[in-house]
Length: 263
Ligand code: UDP
Image 1: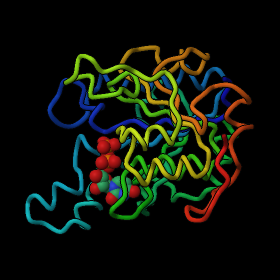
Image 2: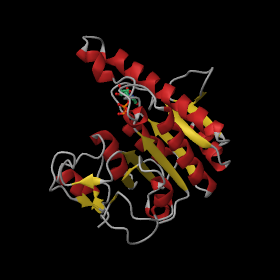
Image 3: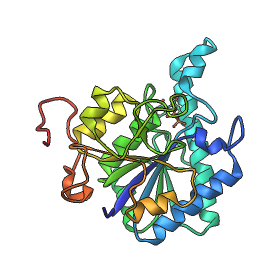
């Protein structure tokens, strides 16, 4: 498979490395180095980072605080992580732009789709901060939505597990990894890939997802070079046929309605 434009989703928690909270400098530089290597191959790279290493909206409720306020705090946490990644990439002389779903004009450009596309065409890494800018969403949803908007070929979900398993591999030793799986099978088997909003957006818009282990150095580059790492989620659960960029329907499709499913 060849990719022209990818959207990489990184979880905030992964940024903690061995720490209990915040950003691990070594992990951050590892991610930046991996992204630089992919940019050097000519692939256009957009990134969404979560904020779970700093704050999640649900935590606010646990403390008896307002959920919406907590979600905005979570969105700000993603901006902090995005700024850290931007800085790390710039240290490696990779041109970047940080576009935020919330207006924070001293440090981020506002999210404007056409501007994001232009930056990508110029070879800049575009980091999307603050999720979609609305409470009750996650950065997985932001990753799916932005990927569809910028017409990315694939969402690469970097995790600490090397793909989608039949059960939790950290708890069940009999769990097996699916090299490929269809959107429908993920739903039938009730597998945990992304939250349902994010997953449905990808399904309805025929946007493939690859779940892979981002913490093994070199994996991102290997994936882009065509190695079968992790788990590929597609409409029919196979890699046969055209590349994702030609297979995918272009543009944002409505979530409702009877869209023709591919066989
Ligand atoms: N968030 C939100 N809207 C968005 C994206 C994020 O409200 O569009 C908030 C939400 O509270 C979430 C937090 O930001 O829990 C951090 O994002 P997420 O949990 O997705 O981070 P990750 O789990 O990837 O580290």
